[in-house]
Length: 250
Image (cartoon, rainbow, N blue to C red):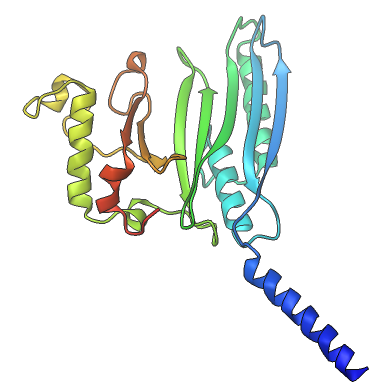
């Protein structure tokens, strides 16, 4: 009997060991969705909010840091990150702003506030996860604004990664990006930036992240370097071009 018990105990321990060694802490995602419409979007002014974004399922160590980060980014599109921290406060603020707009312009045939935001998971690597936040925002003015914002996180901790966490030899990396941007804009190495863009000198884009095949995409949003009518500028760095600059292989 003792022999059988020992065999059973060893089997249980071996099974537990097998699953603990093969258990993955790599996060799983689920989507959250929120829709809110007030007013008459077809014939008058309205508040029109449509949000659909990925969050990490509870139970993973990355869930709390990342979920807080993505919601802060989404719920600050028409405010500051320090001002708005929760969906409830964000919607409450927008409703108050819309009510004030309606009182000031009761006969407005258009206008109001609009936010359509969604996320895409563009890359899943062992050391980095890239999420793209795409937003269309209208908060007054001649037209809505479109934004594409990459968020790169450590998949285990959920903490945000910046360029210096991912890239080495930043000086040479910047030179490569500048060269690619000149080619994209059909500029020679000697052309002045002010003759082709809204800036006087080369600036690195704020948004960059990885895509499914291990390439890096860099995005200049509307008005960052070109007029609204020209749209965003997107650059792609291939895996081969990127490899010498990565701190860790993808």
